[in-house]
Image 1 (spheres, rainbow, N blue to C red):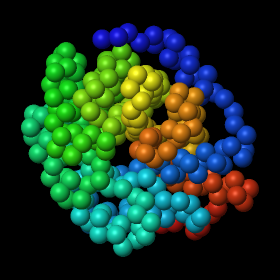
Image 2 (cartoon, rainbow, N blue to C red):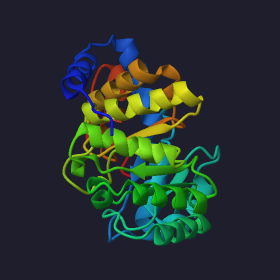
Image 3 (spheres, rainbow, N blue to C red):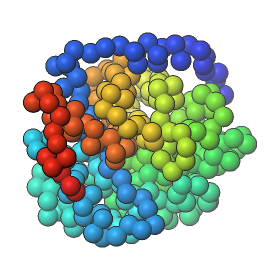
Image 4 (cartoon, rainbow, N blue to C red):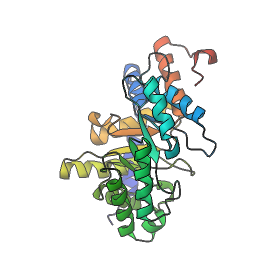
Length: 293
């Protein structure tokens, strides 16, 4: 397992994080940030009605604002999401992501995770989000982590649309996060993702920078594209813009694209729309101007 220079990562992330941007640059980045958002509802109390409202919000976040990248739901709600999006999303831009396997614990066999992924695809999922077994990772059982990622990729018809959730807050160091990212990518995953959003912690500038660097090294070595998703704890438009700046600095502007980078943060969308309205009108809208969905 390679060693990560934590001090250097912290220094670099602080440098990028602290930069100021021109107003016109901010407005463009706000729009692009909306386009990489994944809206999520993963609650025990989820209903068809709640999923339909989530889809409506995804297709039309606000007046004159493009749709988000995807909605993320439990697999048994995928058909409800598909019906809603088929009726509302004329341009077919919003994808359906489903968590598969033991979420958020990640504790199950590779075979069971593969079966769950296959079933989710059958229900209408475009993308599969799986959680690694952090116990296996932390105890050095890297073979199991690799096997479960490989099994889910195979069951999903390929790894291009498989996001591997590392749950960075439970991994012990940036070096372990780096190694878990490498294992997931080598096993065929098309995406690596910070967090389930169900535990304290989540995306940080440091863990995202480490993951982006792994993707950059893999791209230089193989030419293959792997996506990164920042999930958990991204709540403000300012933070979203800063994450886009990290992506731009590490991988280039082409990676600021929903096929290469995502932000999983449902509450973030409200602030992005609010800040876009402010840039357009130079005033903040009243509550009655904001969409209720």
